[in-house]
Picture (cartoon, rainbow, N blue to C red):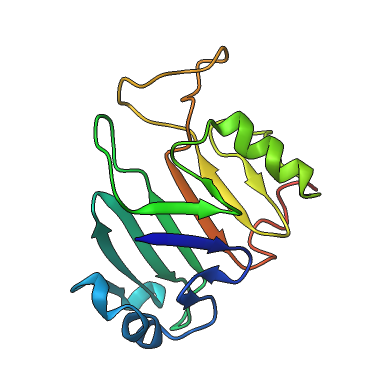
Amino acid sequence: MDLVLDPPRGVAPIHLGMTLDEALAAVPDWGEPRVLQRPRRNSAKASWTLDHVGVQVLAEGGTRVTAIELWWPGEGRTSSTRVLLDGDEVFTTPAARLFQRAAERGWTVDTAHPEHPVVPGVSLGFTRQTSQEVERDAAGLPKYVTSVLVAGKDYYRDSCG
C-alpha cells in the first residue's frame, strides 16, 4: 500500500477538513481504528497500524481533521506500506535528501529545531528523534525521519517568524 502525502491537503484518501466520521468512512480497508475522544479538549484522534506504519488522524479542537501523522515502522522492521512525498519514500530516504528535495521544490525547510524540522506554509512537520539504536548523521541525529505530519498551511505559521 502507498500512502501519498499531499501537503497541505492531507494523505489520500483522507483530506484535511473532513469530519472524523468521513475520514473513517474513506478508509474501510485499513481495518478497525482505535478512536480516542477527549471531550474536555474538544478533540479526537483515530489511529491504525498498517504493516508496522502507524497512522493517526487528528481532529484538534473540533470534529474536523486538522492533521495526519505517520510513524516509521521502528528499528529492524520493514513494511510493504510506503509513505511517499513526491515519489520519495519518507522513511527510507535520508533526511538530508528529503530536505534538499523540499528546497528544490521552492519550500523553506526550517531546521531551527533539528529534531523537529518543519516546512511551514505547506505544512509538513518531521521528527528526527528516537531512543532506538539507529544510524545517525554527523550531528548525531537519526539519518532518517521517524515521523511526518501533514497539516493545513497555517499549522506552523509561527515557526519561521
